[in-house]
Length: 93
Image 1 (tube, rainbow, N blue to C red):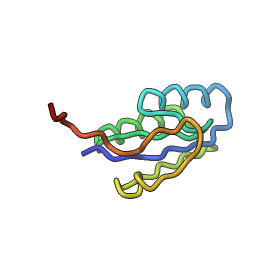
Image 2 (image 1 turned 45 degrees about the vertical axis):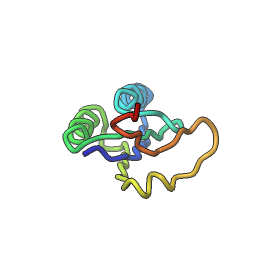
Image 3 (image 1 turned 90 degrees about the vertical axis):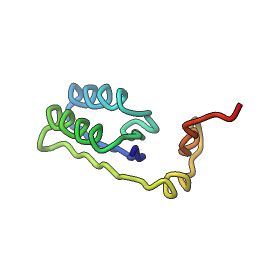
Image 4 (image 1 turned 30 degrees about the vertical axis):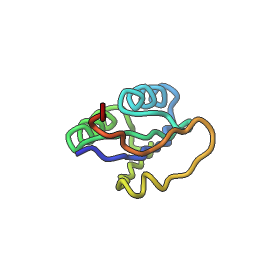
């Protein structure tokens, strides 16, 4: 089952910063400069954390916040943000 995760980071080296942003763009959508939202299952989350661990240094910070569906639907924002609701898996024809 996939869940929304809010991923935020503070990377102190420009090269690593670009690597982290590029890596996360393959997993989710950028909301702000150092904030991404990713819809991941448990295996994808572990793979993402492992890949980030290969890039990040001790002085860097990473925060991954899992959101239940009810919490994700309660997120409010302004700007280009789209809905956090999960589209249905089927269509009625």
